[in-house]
Amino acid sequence: MTPPERTKISRRDFIRLTAGVTAASLLPGCQFSASDKERPNVLFIAVDDLRPELGCYGNTVIKSPNIDRLAASGMTFGGAYCQSGVCNPSRASLLTGRRPDTIQTWDLQTNFRDNVPDVVTLPQYFKQNGYLTQAIGKIYHNDIPDPESWSEPKIYLENFPFDPDAVYRDDVNLANIEKRQGEIVKEGRQDRYIDRFGKWYLKETATEIVDKPDNVYYDGAQTDRAIRQLSVLKNGDKPFFFAVGYYRPHLPFNAPKKYWDLYDPNDIPMAENTFVPEGAPIMAINTLSELRGYTDFRNTPHPADGFVSEQDARHLKHGYYASVSYVDTQIGRLLNELDRLGLRDNTIVVLWGDHGWKLGEHASWAKMTNFEIDTHAPLIVSAPGMENKGSRCDGMVEFVDVYPTLCDLSGLKIPKGLEGISAVPLMHNPARPWKSAVFSQFLREGRWKAPDGREYMGHAIRTDRYRYVEWIDWETRQLAAREVYDHQNDPQENKNLADLPENKALVKELAGRLKAGWRAALPK
Image (cartoon, rainbow, N blue to C red; front, side):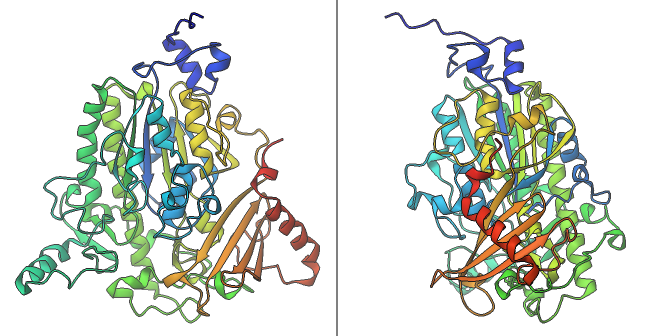
């Protein structure tokens, strides 16, 4: 039997395809060649600890013109949620298209390959379908580069002030590099500043302001490198999937002085709900372990016992805003180069923050809880020829939806086993009925265990009106506590309604929806 003739897609048909029309419906029997350069490229931008505190999400104080420019050329998903409010499980979930319970990745240490060794990740699937896949920066968690995902080894920086394989790659305090490396050499010791992961720990204070160029920090330097790499990728014989992961605005809030100078700290709005939610169980509240890891906040009390001073809170939020603007500039440089090289018309750009982040809300800082502010995160998708440019979709989507969405936009068959669905129909019609709920979870373990010294797993469901959380004792597997927050009357989640007698029927209904799981929440 003679095989069907391979069909080459025209530019016009390609634009229709990237607008969400599947290859099967466009050209029956169509196949792409692995060397077909009309296949859309993918620029995959991950930003650590970026909450939806951006101009395109309605914040009028923060300065994020480049991310806003990307949003103007694509769709801003206002109802996007991660699957866990902590880096490793959130990233592993998005990149495998599976939920944390499926890949049994709940903490910062677990390599998902230990539990699901044969899973095909998002970049790995593109690699299998003829793409050249490359990464620079933080895509998976710091010490889990997942070489199976990439066509070529992950890019590290040459001639940088520190060896990125020998220190944490989520940036450092510059003031500590020369000092600490010099002390190690002077004393002839190699272990003084080695932490339990075997890395030199060169972070110290929670903020740093230096009057130096952008590339003294890793995010600026890696953007220099990523810009050079785009030229290499353009001249290759394959479409590319290029992942660029930014470390700011993760602590420490290090940014050149000019980004701090963008803001008058007195103009930055502070959190309104700087208190523990009424009726919240003990395991619901962040212990501030992350912030306490920095010398200037080592003695910060637990949220139930106190709060950082107003002066410190304002300085921290100023540092967060400066860090966002610093990263925004780097993203703008990357997008400018994409335009300069003539690649933008044939490149899908997706930008996401791996989870939310508290900036004083609930008397707390950082992530690592199950609240709305931890799980609600930014997601922006821009595709060539797409409809509804510059629009916002408030339908609920999840990070497990990114994998099938990028397959759909690229004309690739969506593989079996994914636990999300393509959001391309929402890109056609942002107002259409969609998921009735989204799901997330967080494990209080290790140094992040609850104040009572026990470990708990919290599973959460977010409907259009309510957030419901069940906390399970991780040792006994018994139900330990519940939370219910009514977003119609309490959007900040300041009062837990779960234990009120009049809400017994509501709790039963929400518990049933949580137990029914994500499949029951899919659009009909």
